[in-house]
Amino acid sequence: MACQVASHDAPAADEPAGGGGGRTSTDGGGATASSPRGGQGAGDDAAAAPAGADPAKPPVQLCFSRDKGGRTSTVKAFFGRANQRHPSCVGHSIFLGVFPCKTDDHVALEAICAVWVADIEELRANGVQVRGEPRTVQVILTGDYKWMTAFSGHSGACAGMLCLWCTAVARPTAKNAAMVKHFGCIQDASRYAGRPRDVAHAVRMCVRYAAGPNGSLVRPRALRRHLSIERRSLMVIAAMDVAPMPLHMTLGITIALMELAVEAVTFSLGETAELAFCTSMGEILRHDAGVSPAPYFGGTFEGRKCHRIGRKLGLVADLMDGTAPGPGAVARRRACSLRRGLLPTLNRADTVSDDEFAQFGTDAAAFVDGLKAGFAWFSVTPKIHVLLGRYSEQGLEALHGRFIQDAARYTSATFLGSCR
Image 1 (cartoon, one colour):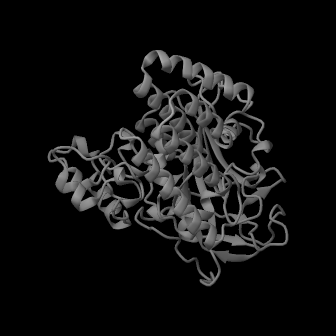
Image 2 (cartoon, rainbow, N blue to C red):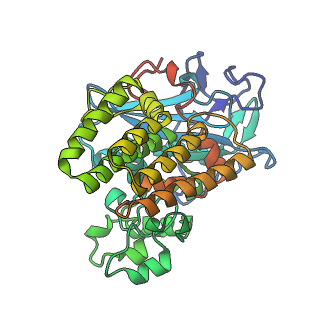
Image 3 (spheres, rainbow, N blue to C red):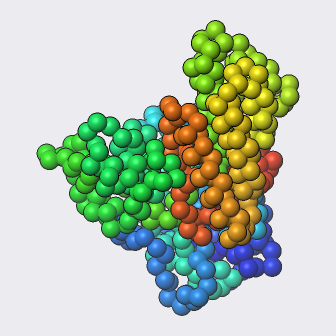
C-alpha cells in the first residue's frame, strides 16, 4: 500500500502531503488509499525499515480500528494517525471501507479482514512517504475489547486469561492455585503479577492453528500453553502496540460504578430499598447531571453523557450516604473522587508528561485497590484492569489519539458513521 501522509512535525497537520510515489488522494475531508496487494509474514511485531528510512525519526503511528453499527448493520474499517495535531479529526482518518455484516461471528470477521489485511501487512513492510521521505509505519490496534480480542485470536470475555497485554488469570478457583501462583491474577488489583504477552507466542499459535482453532484440534492445547489465544490471529501485533479506546473504558467503568452502588444498597437494605435507590439515582442523573439513556442497547449511557456522569458521580455518593451510610458509602465516595481525577487524562487528545503518567498510575491503583477493599464481591473486569496496564509511550499516544477531543465533529451516533 503506497501512501503519503503529513506528519506531526509538518507545518500543518491537515495540509496535503507533497512528494512522489504514493497514490493517496486528499481533499480536506480525509484520505483514500488505493494500492496493489502485497504481503509479508504475520509474525512481524514492529515496523520494518523501508529503504532509505532514517531510523532516528519516529515511525508514523497508524491506529487501526473498526466500528460496527448503523440501521443496516455494517462494519467501517479505518486508520487514524496518532502522532499528529488533532488526531481525532475525522478528516485525518484514512477510511478503508464499509462492509455489510449480518452476523457477529469470527467467520464474518475473517471475510471482512481478508479484503485489506494483506495491504496493511505491505504497509508495515514498506512504510510510507512523508513529504518525500520514507518513514517506517507502526500499526496500533485500537477499539473495543470484543473487536481487539477477536482480531487477535483471543477467547474474549469468557477466557481464562482476560487481558490482551499480560497473562494474569481471570479469577482464582479451587483448581487453579498453581496457575495463579505462576501467572498472577487480575483480581489482585494493582498487585497482579501477570507476565507481558510476547510476539513469539502469538506466532507459535498462528502456526499451531493453521488448520483450525484450538477446539477443533485432535489434541487441544491447555490454558497454560495457549494463554487464551485459541484462534489464529488475523494479524500479529505486539501487545505494546495494542491500545484500548479511552471512551470504551469510560463507558464500562462508569456504568460499573453505578451498578456497584445499587448492589451495595441491596446488600445492606434489601430489594425494596434497591428499587427506591435506582429511581432516585435516575432522577439525579436526569435533572442534576443533565443526562438521559440512549434509546437502544437497553437504555445505556454513552459518549459525552458518560463523561458528564463521571464528573457528577459525587451526586450518587451523596445519595448513597443518605440511603446506606457506612464503610461502603465511604469507600465508594473515595472511588468516585479518584475516578474524577482520572477523567481529564482519559478524555483528551494531548501529550502526557512523565509526571502526569506516573500520577495516573498511582491514582488508578488506589482507585481499583479501594474498590476491592471496600466491596468484598467486587470483581476486576478487563476494562478496569486496563487502567493498571503498563503502557508504552506509543501505546499511550494511541490511547489519547482516537475520538475524544473532537467528538463534536462527528455527525452520527457511531464513531465513524459519517465519512464526510
